[in-house]
Image 1 (cartoon, one colour):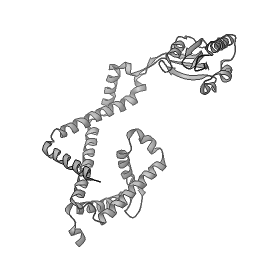
Image 2 (image 1 turned 90 degrees about the vertical axis):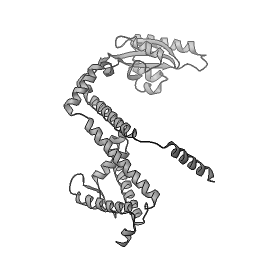
Image 3 (image 1 turned 120 degrees about the vertical axis):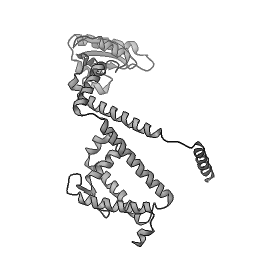
Length: 313
């Protein structure tokens, strides 16, 4: 008790908080969120604690991939527990009890509380499922062009490369014209592509390029393939920067507007994210407007830090 009396008030608060967290974690170990994930000298670390920190530290775009890998989660939980062990050692050693340490810990707590408040306000601004779906429908009806799938074609090709100096251009073009004649005479496109195409990637698939929308290929190729109307029609020789192409249309898929039911799940997420982002910005801006910066003090701080940096060897 004597050693605790010698600590500053923030340090005592931190030590008490750490003790309460350890007791609370042990008490929650029997429920779902309190399921113990890591144990060690600093007490148990619960599932809820890992989830809370993962939400904070793992980018939203990486969340699904993160949780899909037990190895990633285990490594993350181990790192969190390592941090807890070091924090316990820091408390025992009196680290953070000097004015700068106390200021740092205070600011960390403030940052955490601010983030929790912003998340609370975000959740509160999102309407219930029925209202969100009604909002989604109004957005769908107002901007139907956003949900249009472009026209696509499925094609295959045979590429005959031309020398960089163009010296064999005429000969290569003649070969492409010969291929066109063979195909019109009933030759198998896939076989010729495997045997003669310089595009080795598609050649292995019989020249198949899969489905693609307008603008995905170089202009000359794009124009030629989208001019074909019926499956089996041929175009060529088509000259591009890569050489001469012989092209066959396999399938044509017209553009269409996706139905509301098809886009509803992604619309919900987009609208939820939009509402949350707007609320976060509004709350932040409202608080930020109350901050009064002392310009003279800022200039003095900047000058002092600049001088200190310049004085370092």
